[in-house]
Image (cartoon, rainbow, N blue to C red; front, side, top):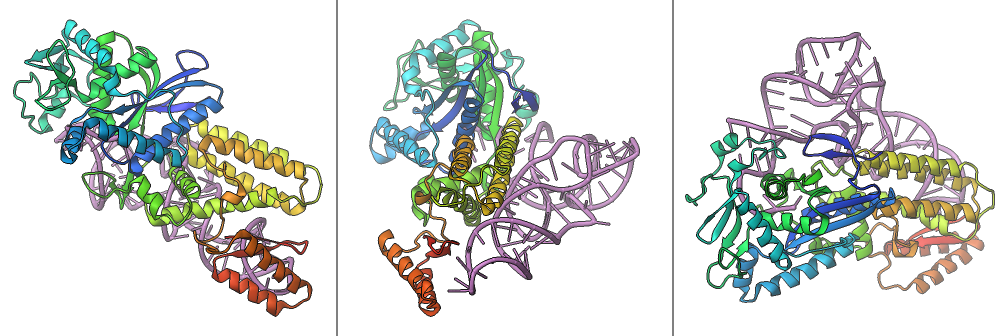
Length: 478
RNA sequence: GGCGCCGUACCCAAGUGGUAAGGGAGCAGUCUGCAAAACUGCGAUGCAGCGGUUCGAACCCGCUCGGCGCCUCCA
């Protein structure tokens, strides 16, 4: 039974979707005016894994993740560069897909854009006006927070408390400083859509309400995003949506913790961020491995906790993955004794049970990884005793199957260099290395250890590690 | 001022009432011509500190210390 921590209640709750075997899930995506950083990656990855696990558990998942493609920052960026907003948003939506693709984050079922839902946004705003929950000032429309008594339920804030410390909002026309824009009139030169209140564009929060209701219905199961969205974004979404429909909005609210640098939140304003592509560019490893290292690193901490990023954290992820891929390499080797199944079946069941228990407990990926580490140890032990090809393939398949939920262990052995640096054996083809290794083994057969050690040294200097097998042949890795 | 999060071994990190998972690094050993990998063993009498509740607390309550987040765009 899957349990999820619901921000709304502040505790873990058994997860039961509205419709059996179907989960409707909406996650706030990004505003597309710049490249994504690691914080965006974490959020995307967390919900990617939740989605994968729900599917693993037998649910069909309707997963909606939006792009905010109309926004002040986009307009600013477009003006700076003297191009249209669409030029900016198209570019960064593409970049988003490229970056997330490298991380193995699957595209959502539906990825709606705000600009393509103006009719829904306007209609929703009209409904709020009709119900007296919103008011108009010239060409702007505001949601009146005081008219929605449950305001603050998600973020556990009271209006009074907030007003005390809220920075002064310059717009004195608003009835309350906490009232927020549903529709903003546009200045000349800004993107604008016709509306009953004149040409303008939507406020930030309304788009998510409009798009989630449009694609998932008034009430749906999961709504997610980063912790920083709890207030005001999600609080406002709830007010708007429930206010307009009179129905419950999202039932489970899930929020991921921040990526930090030296204990501080990674953010644009602090300038302490790493973009995803920057990490890939700087990595000494090929993209598929770097992607898996990042995934491992990001999933080795529970999704709600803070996560400190450093060079060392990636190196540790790499080391941990080496252990798995070293095992996979040995599982893939054609030779081997053919003793049957001396307990691996049980080990695999134990791993799967542990994995599921961990994931069921609020998507505890670190614990799930520990279960996989357990199977790695068991498999290594039994491999020493000798396993049949068939059993070895089943073990590899088990890792592939459970790993797929986390997006790990999908690479083939030859795609993952389990060496110590990313540039092992640079300049040498596999065939050239094979030839040298063969020459070394010839020397070993002649007991010419001076010559064989010389070759080992030569290759080691290039970052190539040779491992001798009991049968006199050797495997090597870059 | 309000709301909230984090503080577990050298490093990363689970555990939220029943007596400290897992990984990495390190050390020792087995195996090996030598290595590597693998395996085995070692490693917090204690979970920021101090009180309290309890038969029993890293986990609950209170206070203190240290770090951070949100209340303004933010994953």
